[in-house]
Amino acid sequence: MKNILVAAAIALMVSILLTPYLIRVFSRQGFGQEIREEGPQNHKAKRGTPTMGGVAIMTAIWAGYLASHGYAWLTDRHAEGPTATGLLVMLLTTVLGLVGFLDDFIKIRKQRNLGLNKTAKLVGQLFGAVSFAVLALYFPDPDTGYRPASDHLSFVRDIGFVSFGAIGFIIFCYLAISAWSNAVNFTDGLDGLAAGSTAMVLASYVLISFWQFRNNCGLSTTQGCYEVRDPLDVAVIAAAATAGCVGFLWWNAAPAKIFMGDTGSLALGGLVAGISIVSKTELLMIVLGGLFVVEMMSVVLQIAVFRTTRKRLFRMAPFHHHFELAGWAETTVIIRFWLMAGICCMFGLGLFYSDWLGLQQ
Image (cartoon, rainbow, N blue to C red):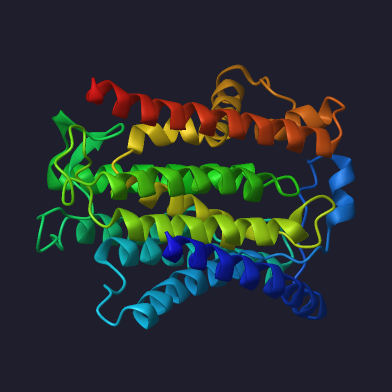
């Protein structure tokens, strides 16, 4: 438990102190956000606001994760270091963060709202997802034999009769990681919306992973125990990421002084996807991240309806812009969408715990 608290404390401190420094540096360098011309008119006042704030979140996550293991080593020289599962999740997050960084940097250099083309972005996501998926099927735990991931589909635990096989699992990982990274990216359109919503999902995973640690089949034979590898390390990462988002949100809340950019949104999307896979909760993540699902589906439906009928289903997609153009104040949209995200997380945690209770009867 102390490891989780150390990770959160260090990540919060790094994020909340590093972000204003990045604001000053990026402002001097002219690293300002370009705004979509067809977007809400009040957003044009945000043009020039520093972007690439995801650098602070990424730095905070790594700082919290490494500090947690440093603390564990100082208090117990025989403590286990970073685990295979933890490093794979961090690798996935970092690779997608680098893809987002390149996308943001191109936008800034060319002073436009389009960075990497679709092919380049998909190639980056493909590399990160395939590398993660292949490696996650290796590195069995020497004591339990559990690997970071399994080739079965899961809700709260593996669904025994739904197996992808190795190739199918790699394809599934690519689809899931691309979907979640893009979903969080779509949600990052209003001040603090993505940071606040992602923090709620990650906080939920702190509870889920810690519960899996306390009731792990490698430590306990309790009915309904969880066959997952390194859940405590996953909880440490989720705690560091939650705190990193909260620290960043201090400066990103409306009116935002900095945006996370694709650097942050793609990295955070990859992070929640990776955690859902290693914690064997891929389908539960659809509930926990319900807000992201709605945002992504609004884009898909808008495109599908427009291409078939030449009419727009929403005033603008993603969904949050529809309400802005309908006359809602930006802060009203943000707070109500945060409430939606919180409700989804509470419902998801309820499903997770009800599965445990059902197996105890």
